[in-house]
Length: 192
Ligand SMILES: *[C@@H]1O[C@H](CO)[C@@H](O)[C@H](O)[C@H]1NC(C)=O
Ligand SMILES: *[C@@H]1O[C@H](CO)[C@@H](O)[C@H](O)[C@H]1NC(C)=O
Image (tube, rainbow, N blue to C red):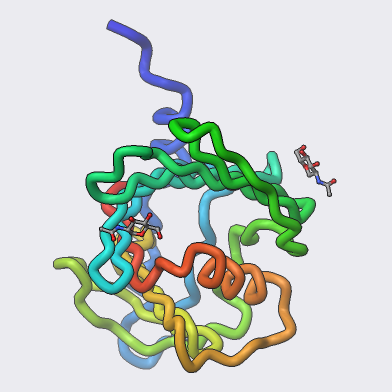
């Protein structure tokens, strides 16, 4: 039997439950703050953009300054599609099956592990995909659901319309993400 992959071990260490997450929601206590992302993780995302479905593996590597999305659109013959983002502001988009690659100067780096907390407004508790979640919104363009008992992200929803541009690098990054992919209406973390 092969040894447990290092990443899985890392995940087990990094993603251990946050015991205080539920307690902070008690009546009278201050609003909970979003749990920062682990500095390295792999997540599988189910994405739905107006009914266009895709499965994406997200490899987030904050110390390495890089972020890799491997996206498989439903029934796409040329899958997968890769999007590698570097913290120096360069992104590469490539489809090996078609031997195509292009780069873009996105101009900002990857999301910080605590990107959500500054400026996020707490909306309270709500169920999402069967999980009892804390919900935050930020700058009127993202709603983020986090499992109240473990602090893990469950779901986030981008609003591609009616957002306002805020002069903040992480927000700019997210807006660019929306523009570049033009796909993410809802992204749901099915494994984190
Ligand atoms: C979904 O969107 C992707 C990216 O634009 C596209 O390549 C794919 O063909 C779309 N799938 C369907 C079923 O329209
Ligand atoms: C950013 O880093 C990547 C990976 O090392 C590199 O390929 C790319 O050329 C760099 N971009 C700039 C603008 O330095």
